[in-house]
Image 1 (spheres, rainbow, N blue to C red):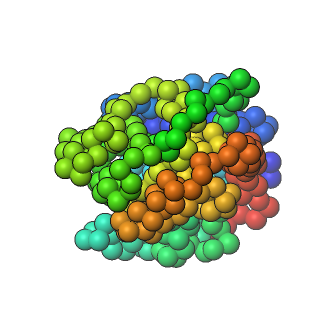
Image 2: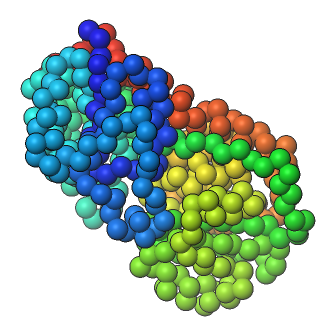
Length: 365
């Protein structure tokens, strides 16, 4: 059976998936549709996220009941439906429940949910129920990061259906005449929403163990924790070395990442961590926790250090290594950049998605 269309059901159009979906549309001869529940949330806009500008992908707002119903009518074996937000968004869930009895091919593209100590067991219990009831119905699961793969395996999805996946950004050409000014200061950069799970407090506390000179840390982003984090940096005597830069345009952030010697993702939990992509594509090595989905890419590319999540001592050791070692050479940065551009390329990821989605055997409920 020829596949004529692929429909991605998502809460909103994400800039982190723009290049991937466009690459799918380039390689797939049929129609590619992005069905979105609504506009990008204001909190994402406040973080500096930009609205994607899709060209080949047809974006459809399924908050309109007629459009939602029209897309779920593509229920034959010539259609593939891929669900993101399967666990938490009502219109995505409604589409799945409508299509579950159909002949359409179904897939999931998802991170693991955050699983706090007190309530994580409830999410895993719900996940196991969903897997027991519906896992046979799915052709494939694009599990984001190592934490995503582990989650879907633990709740009961067959390993052979799980594809290790991530987020994929386009590489940007580096200006040939770029010359970073010479300096004896190791430049560290971190970015993201300033909320507890992102671990900026761990990063600041770990920095207090570093020498009193020879390094600086720029933190980009904003959020409810910012004032507390600024006070923490001041109490630790780091106000002159830890600088809070707020939200900046993505082009400015990527320039800062490229100028840095190391990017740091100290998250207690992070489904992926797109800062890792931005750093690796700039040739900047990464320190990240093993609770970041992107830690699998850092390890695979041998492009940094992965530490145990929530362990300040482990983060301290990695930061000391970064500060005490020679700064990454031009050759190492070029190697990181070239390998990341190849292995984290949207075109390659799109090919893997199509291989997973277009199979000869269709599972039945």
